[in-house]
Image 1 (cartoon, helix red, strand yellow):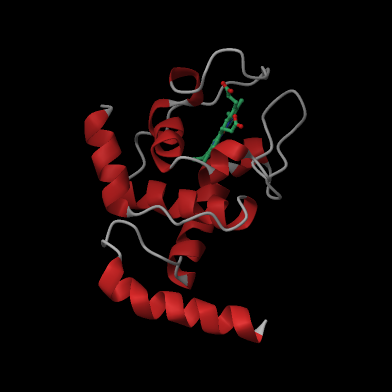
Image 2: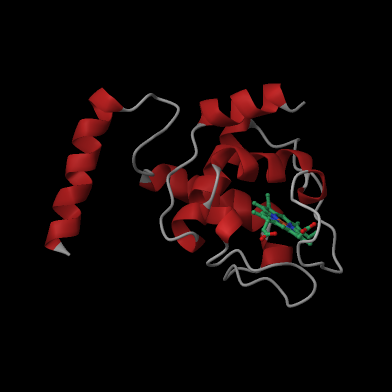
Length: 139
Ligand code: HEC
């Protein structure tokens, strides 16, 4: 535990010099709290407060490869809706996830950072600028 805390502070320290602002090295408590709120308001009824979804209706986000995977893909899943983004042949669900392109860049970055932290084994945070870029590439 001690070791992971010092590694974390090291990551915070070096992030100032090596990371671009759009790829934050660690998620701040403020971003995680804001992301949890966005999740609560927009995602929780389907994916459930614990992120396990409902069998056959909507997928679990916990341990999900897409959640922990490519940032561009997961940003597009939220902005464009999964049906427009994910490959054919994936498992089918009785529910349909709408696109959430009414959310601001910041809300999308926050909620994705939150679910990647909570359910995606601490996959890298998503930055506001990454969402902005993807939104302009995939209007
Ligand atoms: C109306 C129910 C509903 C809501 C609300 C909803 N989703 Fe989904 N979500 C689904 C369904 C159904 C799928 C599977 C869709 C498919 O594969 O076509 C899905 C798929 C996903 C996936 C891809 C996971 C995978 O393995 O297929 C992610 C990531 C995701 N949702 C995140 C979110 C986030 C973040 C929010 C809130 C901003 C949200 N969802 C809101 C129903 C919902």
